[in-house]
Length: 124
Image (cartoon, rainbow, N blue to C red):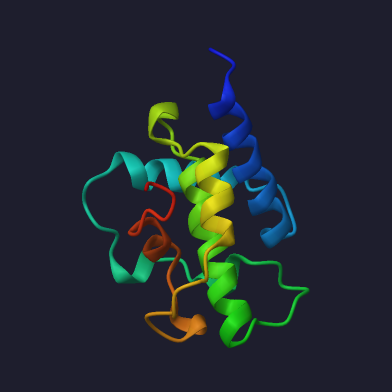
């Protein structure tokens, strides 16, 4: 394993996920990796809702907080890409975090974890 900036980016992704989930994201990272490696879409009954994986001790976010949370999760997932060359740099992460969050495509309660994988927010 080559230690470089992309390892720091991966660590940032893990820590960000840990803060949002309220626990170490080990199982979720494995799940994410399996989604990355399969090109077939997951059936609707197997999809995980974002509201079900975030820290249940917190109340569900509303409007701007929900948009910020979804954007932050997308950035964290980009940092966890299994291929280090496809991970953003910390400069790209910083720029993405500084941008205004996009409106949610659907109500927060219905956003699926897999939807966070569709838009790459760090690659400019």
